[in-house]
Image (tube, rainbow, N blue to C red; front, side, top):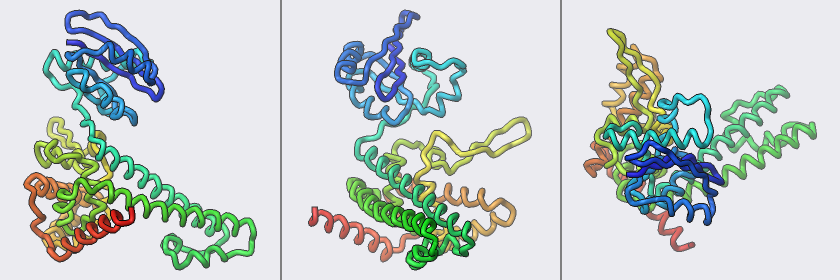
Length: 362
């Protein structure tokens, strides 16, 4: 067996090579272009195991050569930081560390690094669209905060809710005779409204990209509070429910299950799993109140816990409970037990009409 650790950058990558028999290592750096990739491919064999740290370019890079080797393992960046004790960081040292980890893992049979699943292109496209969506939403919040700050500086008593609403925007644009203030407000408003329009176009692209996952969306939207958009986010995060052996691993991956540490007689609750994904958790938070209102069982459970626990912990517990139900729905391929048939059919009918309309205009 041969082992390769790769330290990948945007324009080049450094490889450290080791064999099963020999403890000697060989290090080589390749340019990330056609000539460099060709030279790299000639060093690979069908019995080679490769370990790469997850970066923005890793998945596309791994697809180029994974058919040429035995296995490509993508390592979670957070997990690598926990086991790396090297104080001095260079490309060669990082590649050597990765090579030693993969060799030790393969020869010992003990899993030191849990691999990151390389998503298919459809999922990678969805994730990319959602990343851009979150960027726009974050930028919109910054624009609104800046507008609010300018108004407060001049003692105008607009609340953030009024700035978020579209009815007050014309009034805000014309609020001052000060040419500098009016210029800034109009510039920011123009940018905000343009970005809001771009967000809507982006949401449409996300719904189009989610079309291959119609059957999963149909199941997920049977739960009250889960829209087609949120269902697409869940699919983008999990890829396939079959990757998870139980609901505990599923909820942990979606950043809703805290870590529990036990020492002697003490137990402490720590943060959520940093190796997981948080998009679904973020979007689902916006629907939690609706879910509570639609389920008497959940409402009683929530109210009982909030009597003696912090509200933030209970809401995280609510997310975890909802994700556990989602896991069972997808695993069994069944609709939610509290499904409102009319509401569910309405969601799916609206989504199908959107896809049909787009197909006609495309």
